[in-house]
Structures are given as C-alpha cells and as structure tokens.
Amino acid sequence: MKILLVGNGAREHIMAEKLAESPKCTELIVYASAVNPGIKKLTSAYRVGSLADMQAIQDFAKEQKPDFAVVGPDNPIADGAGDKLAEIGIPSASPVSKCAQLESSKSFTRDLLKKYNIPGNPDFKTFTSEEGMLEYAKGLGEIVVKADGLTGGKGVHVQGDHFNTIEEGIEYAKSCLESDGKVVIEEKFVGQEFSLMSFVDGEHVVDMPPIQDHKRAFEGDTGPNTGGMGCYNYPGNLPFLVEQDLVDAHEITVQTAKAIKEELGIPFKGIMYGGFIVTKNGVKLIEYNARLGDPEAMNALSILQTDYVDICKAIIDGTLDKLDIRFAGKATVVKYAVPEGYPTNPTKGTEITIGELPDGVKMYYASVNEVDGKLIMGGSRTVAFVGIGDTIEDAERLAEQGVNSVKGPVFHRKDIGTKELIQKRVDMMDEIRKV
Image (tube, rainbow, N blue to C red):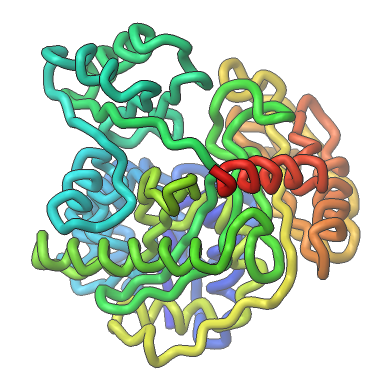
C-alpha cells in the first residue's frame, strides 16, 4: 500500500518509522510544514506546505493517490484534513473535523459527557460573556480555566500553578473570551495525571499502555507549561495506579466513543487520547485529544509489536476487534532536548550536533532542519530520545545518555523517569487514597 502521513514532528517521525517498517507499506509519502530529516529518509515523495492549507493537502493526495492517510498533529485534524481527503475517496485513520471537536472544543467535550451521563466530569460552566464568571468561580473553591480552542497544549491554566487568586484566573478567562468567544471554568482536581491513548474504530476501543507526561519546563515540575518535556511508562501499570483506575478510564472512553456517534451520527475513527487524573473520588477526565500525544506516541509506538499498518486499516474498516494488538512488556522513558529559553524565548537558528547513541536508545527529530548537512534548531522542542529497558531504571539511564549526546544551546529535564520523582507520585496517591 501507498500511505500518506501528514505532519513533521517527532510524533510523526515515529509514526513514519512504524508505517515504513511494515511489509504492507510499499511507499510512504508525506505532506509537512518543514523538512524533518528523519522522516524524509523514509519517503518516496515529500511535499512542504502549510498544514493549515487543506486544499494543498488534497491536491498532493490527488496527485499521489495513496491508499489511505493518517494525520499526526491536532490542527490539520481539527481543520478538516480527513474531510478533505474523504471528498476524493481517500480514507483516514484519523477523525473528521466534527469528531475532532473532542479536542478542538473543551466545551463540546464537557457538554457531551454531561448530556450522556458519562462519569469523569468536574463541576464546570461554559461562558460566552463575563457575566456571572466571578460568582461561579468563587463557588468552586480552586478553579481551572480552559481556553475553548486549540492552544498547543498551553491553554489550560490551573490555580496554584499558573495563577494564585480567583481574580487572576478570571483575568485569564476574559482573555480567552476575547480570542475564542467562549471559555470553560471548572473545579480543580487534586491527584495524579496519566495519559491513556486508545485506538478507536467507531465501535471498538483498544488501549495503549498508560503513560505519564511532564508538561512543566523545569525539574521538580516547575516553570511554564510546554508541549511536553518527556514521559515514561512501566511494564504493566504505572506504580501510582491500581487496575481499577485503568478499567474506569477505559470505560469513560468507550462511553464517549458511543456518545459521539449518537450525537453527531458519525463514528469516531482514530486515536482518543484521554488525559485522566486519579483523585480521592476515582478517575476523572481532564481532557481528550483526537490524535497521538507528543511525546507519548514515542513511548507507546516504540514498544508496539503489532503491524501499525494493520492497526490503521482496522481503524478505517471498523475491525479492531479482529486484531490482536500487543505491546512489549518494557519500560520506556522519553526525554526532549529543547532550545535554551524554551518555551517563552527559545534560541533558534543555531546548529546542534548529535553524538553516537548507545544500544537501546532511539532518536526522533522534532523542530530541527537540515541545512547543508547541518542540524539547525527551529525554536520549539528539538529532538527526542527514547530509552527502552526491562526496568524503568534501565530506560531512564539510556534516555539520559541519549539526550546528553546533543551538543549545542539546549537543555532537558534530568528528573523524568527517575526513582525520586516517581516516588513522589506514589506518596501523593497513597495520601489521597487514605482520605
């Protein structure tokens, strides 16, 4: 089969690798906003253009005639890349724009869960004007303010992390109203977050291993929010979760997939990525994404044993229940090298070099261009390293060795996947479960 991949980050680099390694993939073609040197080596055709230009994506597909497509990033999914490809008879293993509202509109998801009595919602309210915002927020105690639309993972502001007082939160809510026309204010959950990504074919839901991401830029979970500095998984379950937590999170996704079909009359086909939090009152939903996470894709796909092309086809055909999807029982740790100054004032246009990598480490390019054989930073997360081991200690050590091979004005979080940081998560959940 000839397969079209849309996107050019580290997430798309591992997607390209998994597609290309399938014996069923005879040709991989890519539409991207920049040249990713790792992806380009795997392709027979590579078109650079705007990821916001749906017509250009369709024109490239018309010219290349792929058998199916898969779209990596959130914006082209939300903007209708899948819809545009469907117009010319090319199916996608990614959702159409109506279904992608699950990610592109925070209010859509909260309202959907409420309407269909799906567990996991907080107390929340969607506002389209400032009227009543302050009174409602004061009634909740501590609050979370969410921009309604896509913000590159930086639109959720949490009291105590991003602002201190209710009044400061309302000022942020007002700025969201100006940009989006609506904003969601909800109660703050206290607990430990985890990502549970699932393959969904409209009827069936198959989960990937649970993963924990690290959004804050600096060690000890401090500093501004980023797109994700790295993450880890254990063989089996995360140490601060119990089996019932995964059962509950899975059930929320199953019910949400059913509700979308009921509400929109269209099946959700693609990835439903639940950002969950386990609290003293059980598992709650923070938000859904309609695609693989970045960096979580690198944890999950690096240990995926089932042919990724078969999975994409099963998503399209509605036959996930016929496929035995397996992951190796390994630990993985992902660490991103990012430019100095990231995310607020990142260095860009500077050369980096990458040394030799040890066995057990994989590398995926993100915001980096190859110019005259040199690697030049683009200003966002630069390159990701995945350590894969039998234990979390092995995986963390390998990821650290990998990320330390980068020379240039970059930094990374040394504490991701370490015993000390993970133990803090375990201790916190032990305290919360006692209450």
